[in-house]
Amino acid sequence: EAGVAQSPRYKIIEKRQSVAFWCNPISGHATLYWYQQILGQGPKLLIQFQNNGVVDDSQLPKDRFSAERLKGVDSTLKIQPAKLEDSAVYLCASSSPRGRETQYFGPGTRLLVL
Amino acid sequence: AQKITQTQPGMFVQEKEAVTLDCTYDTSDQSYGLFWYKQPSSGEMIFLIYQGSYDEQNATEGRYSLNFQKARKSANLVISASQLGDSAMYFCAMRDYSNYQLIWGAGTKLIIKP
Image 1 (spheres, rainbow over the protein chains, first blue to last red):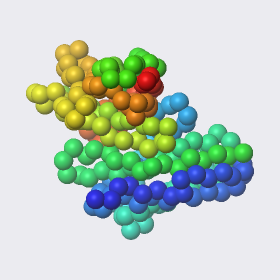
Image 2: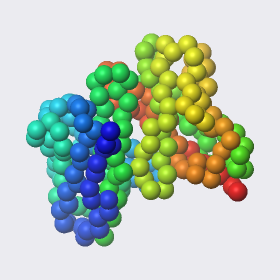
Image 3: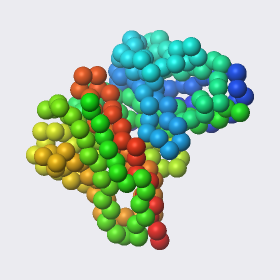
Image 4: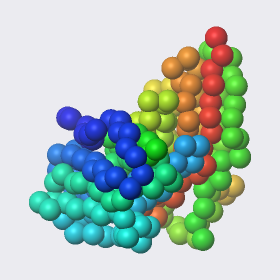
């Protein structure tokens, strides 16, 4: 079974530029999560999708961040315009409503904003 | 409020020794799930082990076991016969059953010495 896929793995941009991250969850997983992880800290949930609907985006800075999951499968997270403090690892995870709802993570995208 | 506490910011352990990583939790829920994840320097968050609040036996997965003491609200991770590849950040997390989100600890950085 293929795991969670994310791209790109690394991205370097200058402040005020825009950037987009892509995530493809494990097949059949209805719930998808985007996290931001600052170096040395635990992950912070940005947004949670159930199929193509948003369950929770209370911690998403909506003035600059947006996310979509149009067909209930893959998802895109966008930052526009980026700030220096957005430098972090962006993790995507998915889980299945069956069983333990364990979240499985992708390899992450390391973003550096200069 | 629900909370996860990991009191060890960092640990050094000799290769082949057993390691115990501490995790205490706070919740008023009767039903909850506890998870441990490993995050190597590559950045990916790897699921290790799960313990449900109603599970009577301590969870085990290969060299990983979870020392679950419900009365003390602790869920310590035990790694037997540590290997150099075990060097990583380790996160304890608890699932909030109201929204299936994870509440994360601050993590413990484990370094295995040869």
